[in-house]
Image 1 (tube, helix red, strand yellow):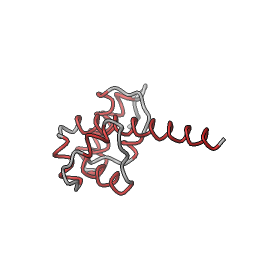
Image 2 (cartoon, helix red, strand yellow):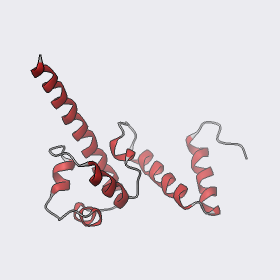
Image 3 (cartoon, helix red, strand yellow):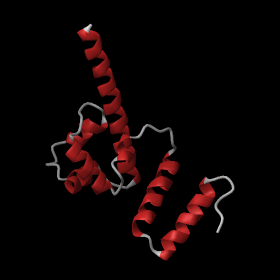
Amino acid sequence: MGGTVLLRNDRLRDEFRTLFGNNLRRIRVLRGMTQAQLEYKAGYSGNGALSQIEQGLKGMPINRVYSVAKALKVHPSFLMAQCDYSDDDIETIINFHDLMLTGTPQNISAIRQIIKTMIPGGITE
């Protein structure tokens, strides 16, 4: 019985590593960064660890998740979310997140435009 639980946990771990790696690669590419650039910004030593993580071969310690998310300028949940969004949708969500962080009047106007395109019926003024 213990082996079954171990196998199930291994499968879940591998599925999560694959999900995380895919999200990391998509967001990194959408941000226009190379693996080397992200490694540098996130404080990795440049030993190719991100390549292994993006391939789902290796996990990432939680403190690194935060430093990588910060380097990518996204919330850590972006890296861990299971979603079937297109790259365009993800880019829109990331841009929306960026706009929310700065909160200038121009950005608030841009946020309204994004919401109008994403929500049927838009928003009311």
